Image 1: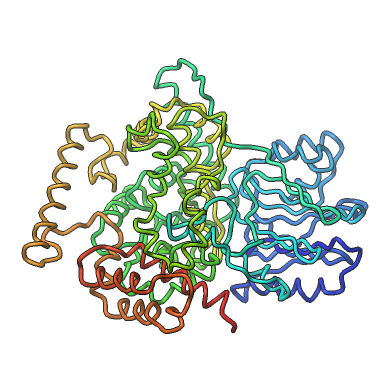
Image 2: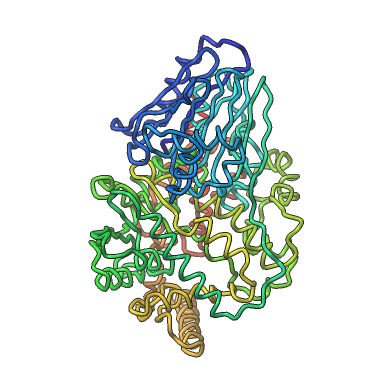
Amino acid sequence: MPGIIGIVSAQNENSNIEKLLSKMCQAIKHEEWYKIDTHISKSAGLCRVHLGVFNPESQPIFNEDKTLCLLMDGEIYDCENLKQELIHKGHKFSIGNDPELILHLYEEYGKDFVHKLNGSFTLVIWNERSKKVILINDRYGLRPLYYTVHNSNLLIGSEVKAILQDETFEKKVDERSVADFFSFGFILGNKTFFKGIELLPPASIMTYNAGQVSIEQYWDFNFSEEYEDYPEEYYVEKLSKLILQAVERQVSGNYRIGIPLSGGLDSRTIVGSIRKKKYPIYTFTFGKKNCHDGKFARMMANELGTVHQFFEFKPDDLVSYAEKTVYLTDGMKNCIHSHIHNIMNGIDQKVDVILDGIQGIKLGTPDPGLYKAGDDKILLFLLNPLENIELFFSKSYYIKIKQYLTYFMNDIQKNSSIHLSLNRFSYFQLSQRKRRFSYYGPVILRSKVETRFPFYDNDIMDFILTVPPNLRLNEKIYLKSIIKLFPHLSAIPWQKTGLPLTASKLHIRIHGKMEELKRIFNYIAKKTTGIKQVLKDDQNYQDYDNWMRDNKKLREYIYNILLDERTQRRPYFNQVYINGILDQHMNGNKNHSELIGRLLTFELWNRQFIDEK
């Protein structure tokens, strides 16, 4: 993912900055057409690697006396009022882009300017006179930025691999992250797979000066737990208006807009909110032939008149992109969940910006039993820990990581002021699962196109945090807002239920029972006759469980990597147990595709980042 690169020395002068900065920039320049902006002084080297979409003008931006400079990755939304406010105070603009506006804001308000920003961004502000650097990211950490302090240098990069270009940095695997990844499928907190390299927390103002790092958090998901006694219609009406406002903000500019369209709620909400004056817009869907996503998305595209394309998701596609997606995400996303790469070839020829429906708006839970649950039950529901973890690792490695498996809650960001269980569920979901799992899909996308996130608009999020939990349960007011805004789309089935959004509770319950009976029938057929599936399931866009068994190319790829001598020499796993997992899966006795994906991802990561070239 393109982004920000930097080296700041605690010494007055560092002769290696220019050479190292060049290597760091090249490490994240994944395409020849990327653009690079640099600034080098005696004690700092800063770089922006970018696609030339948002704020394409050269950076850094300097203030009038050249004592301050700023580099920015990303953008802010709806900022004309801020600009007029500064002009009224005497500030003058020569470029008129976001970085120039932010530098003026910093000069006027100091670090407090960040409370005025609504957007997706990382910023670096360098003070040449005081030799101080400030890093700032958006409220939600939508654009990853990693950092370490090493040999009296602060090293930063939008990808971990940029920092690794410093050959004096000793690469040590962080056992806590390994424990997280195999227990839950993603890394918790701000850790990476490397000791000493961390992810900048969301809503951070990080200052580095004279070798010292300090981080202050300027915002958090603070739920209002004393709720106003408004009628339900008030919340539906308010959310409806905020959705339209957020999408209007994020289709601004002269960009070709694309939306991944599925049978879910989020993408239909985004597409439905776009006014016809912004057309043509490009929508795309990927999945198995005849899957619900493909069918329902095509119905919506026909209704709305978008330029639509379906990308068939084939069983052996993973073989072609697993290594690439592991590399782009620094190994932190299971490659079997990196299916967005399936549409990447040529996407930049069709769109400039993709509106991503990451679910910031859905702060409910489908399980009413979590209403009064404690943290242990909430986290077990969210994280779904791997069973028999003590058998999974080798004895020696299990001893190393046992403490991390037992006390994983120490790495969960907590907010002691949140008391209601559903709010705590939502807090953990947003601060952990969404940030450390869902955000890596956009990381893959940004290797080709830019991304925007309508449901992470500040006004929407501020409002959602005030909605009573009973109205968020099962997306209650979200569904009602969609039906209110887009009655013409409500008759199109929802991927989750296979029924229209307006279906009655009884209809949904009957449909759910029929689906459950179908699963039971298939299970009995498999056990009694060996037939894998009698009644076809078109609901899911992929079927890795059977693809790994039935597709020769994919099965051989998995075996060639996981049973390779180099893989089996590594100290992490109980290879007898791992071989048993593979046998169980390939023989159809149990489904282990998720776990096989984690093993595959971790081995590819070792080969790309740990093994000597």
